[in-house]
Length: 430
Ligand code: NDP
Image (cartoon, rainbow, N blue to C red):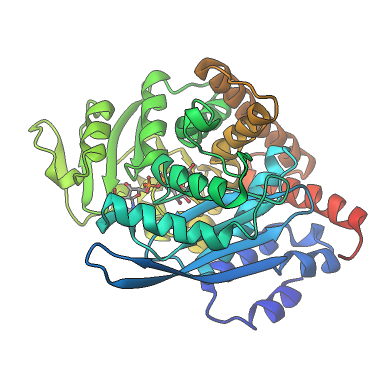
């Protein structure tokens, strides 16, 4: 099986993120994969690359690349976020779309997998430039999406503001108020608690794990990387459940407070556009250029970026007594880091399962839109918690059926693969 995968992947030697994601998947459940299904799973169904021309604040023409990788639609319409970040390229998009396909399968919602975005950097742009860019991006993307075809959402660099501009342009071009995007503003049919869902969902899943072991978040020290959407709402939920978030990071470094950070203050600080290094609270220590994973903790939640945790970081976490690592970001752990975990007694929940809360809330938004309804925050939150507990229960059952109790990486890959395999087979070779 490895040979089939290698042969296909070697045709694209520059796509290292994609290759690593595929090879880790194949390695973990090789004995359960059928060769013909694997071949179909190694190619995206469709890859769209387009140019996005726009005019900057000085009246100069700028051009970025736009991408949409429609990876697999065996289970339903393509679904996955849009990322605006300078690091975006075809490799990043294919890797994220591959992971999304399995994540969506795990939710049981009947959604295919996709990912898209652009190498546009919204961080150094004006409001007007962001609107112009979103309109130009959607002018092309609109030809390839639809409420029964492909339903994009946000990701890094694409929040409610960008979704608003993208949806506005889609509405103008198609002359319809079709719910083709999720993560919309409430007045456009967005779901309450969608913003919170990935971070909350991550913590609900860890809570389900702790509960499974007759334990809880009470008095646990938690380290969270990042201080963006996923990280902040994960941190707020950890506090609600009785845990203590002692360290958080951004691109400038990390902040640490032994008695627990004031998350609302950090949220306010970050929302004002400042770096963590600019926090002036004397009770908070700022650490520059050292990995946050040196901080001793019970639970580690990487919520920043892919490949942010390597094997040395994992060794440090193990030596410092960490017991649980759950991925809030998409594949924040390298292959070598995961290998280290598998040799240890750390319990690991992969992002495919742990960060599925955003997809779950998107599913709720789609249901809301179809029924012309608006659910309350509490209702969405309850559905989210229930879904994350159910996904975890499915992982426990799958791990037991594989005879590998606690191996939630293998369980997630196996469960998602089996759901895809059944559907792909029944559709024929298409
Ligand atoms: P945000 O852009 O809101 O936040 C990302 C955070 O990570 C920021 O604090 C950023 O720092 C930090 N960061 C980014 N790159 C680096 C880096 N190279 N080194 C150190 N810190 C870094 O993104 P999200 O919170 O939305 O997403 C985070 C991760 O979660 C991504 O992998 C995303 O794909 C994944 N994810 C997100 C979902 C969602 O619903 N938003 C759903 C599922 C997965 P700074 O503030 O300095 O920029």
